[in-house]
View 1 (cartoon, rainbow, N blue to C red):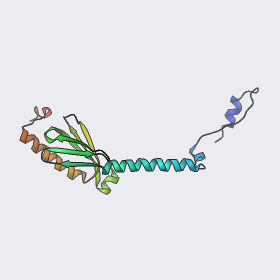
View 2 (cartoon, rainbow, N blue to C red):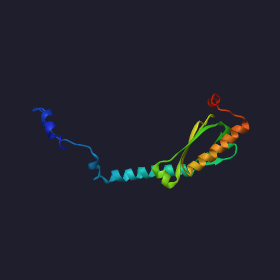
View 3 (tube, rainbow, N blue to C red):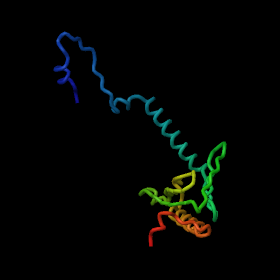
View 4 (cartoon, helix red, strand yellow):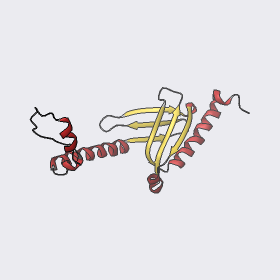
Length: 151
């Protein structure tokens, strides 16, 4: 699509016209450096996501969910199970086919909400976690305030 008809109306008679340039993705296909840098950047992003996923582990005991993450240095965080408020398992259509998904855990401690991303068997993980945090609540005698008024 040419902008020449618009330019004829906009450019005044006393102006000298030099050039008109349009940026588009069609112009990029001729620059191999653009594609090279795009692939390198995308590759580094995917590698970072992969390594973040494989260097984070989640361990469930009867009292705590322990999260260990890091490549060169290790960070250890834990959530006491009686403090877990809610857990949700989510899967996209592709995740269902691969039997992976995200499990979101909300807690009342300083950790807040964590998301266990792209883990195998997310519904089993969430169900096991739910059973354990309900048992931990019962053992501690913990009652959520939102459930006090319900019959």
